[in-house]
Image 1 (cartoon, helix red, strand yellow):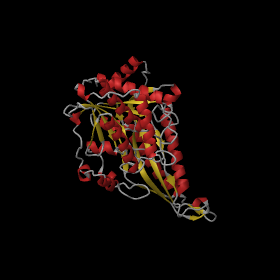
Image 2 (cartoon, one colour):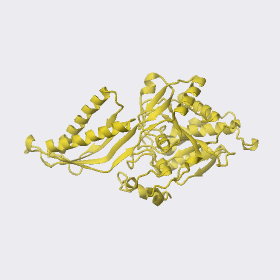
Image 3 (tube, helix red, strand yellow):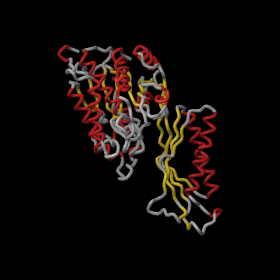
Length: 427
């Protein structure tokens, strides 16, 4: 990088001030009246992308958009010919979510590049930021759309998934965004893996562990994968609530409740054996056009998700799930209809990168704690594509996927310091 390319931070502007301003601007641009909504490939995510682009260009960084409509930010002296360290996270959010899920990682990546440019340091490998799109599964049931497009792993069936509420398919949405969906359906890559030396993502922890243990930062060792169904239909038979005795009922609600309690029993027993496992039915309901207090429900739609760091545990629990569906069907005279199964692979973070991040944490006086991620991240897609990958967690109160996310700026800046130290040393 030549001296002419060095960008100086204007006084008294500091990285902390840039971070605060960026988070405030991001919130203002994507506030929905309750929380934050940045729908993938739509107005909210587009607004966030515009905020990130403006900040990057204002600080002298170069911006380009890749074939999956992800944003790549590079330093002034980077001609793009050498494999780079990618510092990345996502721009989208769940409906009425929080301001830091995804956004914190993007801001951290931008701050790291701004600091490298301002100080004129020359890392051993180029450092680039990547702003990924469509990480959340909230709208179409498929997570990591932007990163899966890059590696040709977006299933053609996923592109026919319909957005909740409108029925618009993911394919239609991607077409409207200018993405070559024919290439995506054919599994063609939109990135050359040889251009990526390593991938590092900063993210808020989305659970309570770091808060309970008083860790401002932690290094991630692995990411849970998941098996899920977007919508399963339990079909029984509707009837009058006062006239049909229990032994003649085909009550879909009681059938689904029975199924969930059976799964909970299996879950508890497997945890006692030391397995890593979480089970969720996050969407469940009768048809509001038909349900009534005095009506035996004939149909219930529900979602199913199981997460684990172990592929074997995922598959074993899924078989238990299907077995219990058969048992409940026989006992309660209902039937279960399944949509396509969606699978997100578990991933291990690169052990060498984890060691380097732990060593950098120690040198900075930060905790040297490691932690597995219960939530999925784009880092898993990169890791499973053969890219050495790692993650930094930052403490965050009140969980995530809700408006009450409460990452402390002091904790965040320590995470940024760790990311910067790793970047200038090189993977």
